[in-house]
Length: 202
Ligand SMILES: N[C@@H](CCC(=O)N[C@@H](CS)C(=O)NCC(=O)O)C(=O)O
Image (cartoon, rainbow, N blue to C red; front, side, top):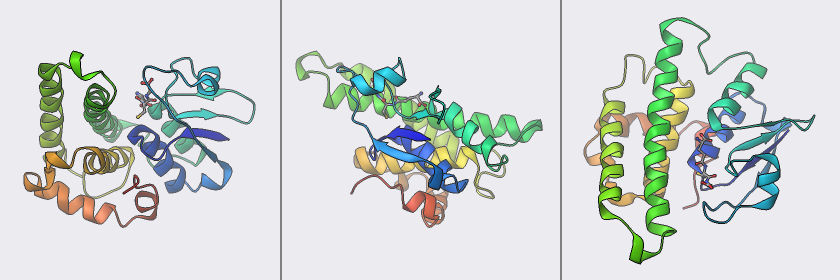
């Protein structure tokens, strides 16, 4: 399998962590792929009409996207270690994943608004509203459902990607000052090889 990813992408990091947690990494070639929301990468476009990473290309040429689909596919291949298969645990895990993906959506939108959109047409209200979603999401994560810290499943994969991305792109958010439980949890989670080895560039 080939995975189109890059070291800065928090969504790609979800897949990179899952590939390591499931021990499938030896079967996956990670291909560093540059993306821009305003300049389509032609090679990536051939595999994914949405021109986004992560994209997984299976050995038979089938492509899978987005991060949720790829993570669950890899986990199924490995015998379901990270996605509970049924019951309340499954919905809690999927909701936690959705919460983390939503925080990342808001953060990536701010990143594009501030790093890609020309300064003359930036929209401060838009940035503030997305920032509000990040704060609301972090508060919900801090008080997440019972069991958040007790295991490492797809929700926790997402949380590690959120906190790592905020440290990488938005140090001004200084989330540790307001979310002590997340701080303690992330310190522990960062010791996992899958999290440590996929950290964004310093
Ligand atoms: N919902 C998607 C989001 C993926 C995404 O937004 N990836 C970004 C990089 S972090 C991307 O490829 N952006 C290029 C673009 O928006 O055209 C997923 O979970 O995989």
